[in-house]
Amino acid sequence: MIWTHIEAWWNAAIADKGWLVLFGLSAQIMFMMRFLVQWISSERAGRSVMPEAFWYFSLGGGMMLIIYGVLRPDIVIIAGQIPAMIIYARNIVLIRRHKLGRVVPAARQTAAVAE
Image (cartoon, rainbow, N blue to C red; front, side):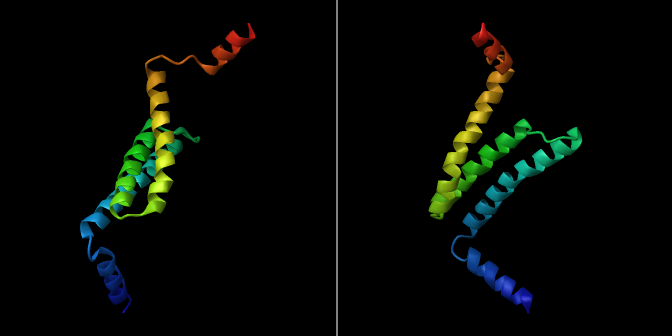
């Protein structure tokens, strides 16, 4: 009996845009992967860490969710993801700058100001 209700709900959910539902679910999985990556990295390190992959999954999943929100259309998803995309992109820029050695560590900046 419960399976009949679940099947009816699923059929109603994907009735007119089954491909869009599958895309939206893929976006959610991509977005969820960031938490899995962060959790595994933290467990391995024995402390809370934020791996670089977290930001890439955030950016990819966020982009997919915005596309989903536009196609649906769902202003709540769009409005929730656009500001977050700025933060994800900024963190990726900071990581890349650090890897290229273009960033002065905060301790050296403070010492330079004090002199």
